[in-house]
Length: 328
Image (tube, rainbow, N blue to C red; front, side):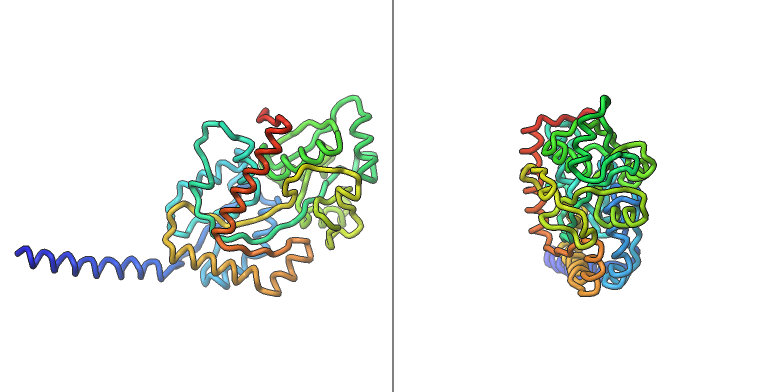
């Protein structure tokens, strides 16, 4: 009898393992959700929507982009962290993921992307542009700095939310330029930029792709970009360095990556990584993104995890040195 039970156990194991492998091997057999932590119209939303068809082709399945704004990103980040680790719910993250972790150090949310996520693939990076409302009486960075210092009431700047890329990169700029500003957080880059266009706030840090369209449409001005060299998308706009603005040693570019809930089966995680490698190394994709100064930069999951850790470390140093507190 014991021998029979032993053989039965082995038989069951042989049946279960192939069944699990088959389930992973069939991935994906339904649409995959790509969660963006900010509303439509922001840099991350604009970036990933340019790749939707390419991802679907490489994946062999439909993808659905879901915008879950609010909480400076935390609503979406927590949602993804708490989702089943089956590869069907993925986060399209930007460096706000690391910046917020540095900004909210010591807070009791318990959220930590280094522990709660599987890093899957780094995708691309892009400099930012200083977007300025048309009603600001300035045409250069130096004129803008002088205006900000001369008005009796501090100017406001918008961001996609406290802890967002736009928030902290603008803090770096105003620190380097010595400009007095008041931070006004929004629930995403789209609403923030809408109020810059309307002239309700003076400025916002925007992705090059977003800024290029608005500048060419005459809806905003831009006085500087954050890259080391001028942007091919905005060749007449100087860099911060050319404009005489020194800044802290932090990465002033957007970067984008794909993360999933901790514990995704390795065959599934590896397949997702290969899908994004295929997309981001496609010459046609690279050429298309370069037109809006999004530079493809595929890196595997392990390298993305290390990048996130480094981002948290560097921004923590800046935030602590400047005494930046969460006050909004």
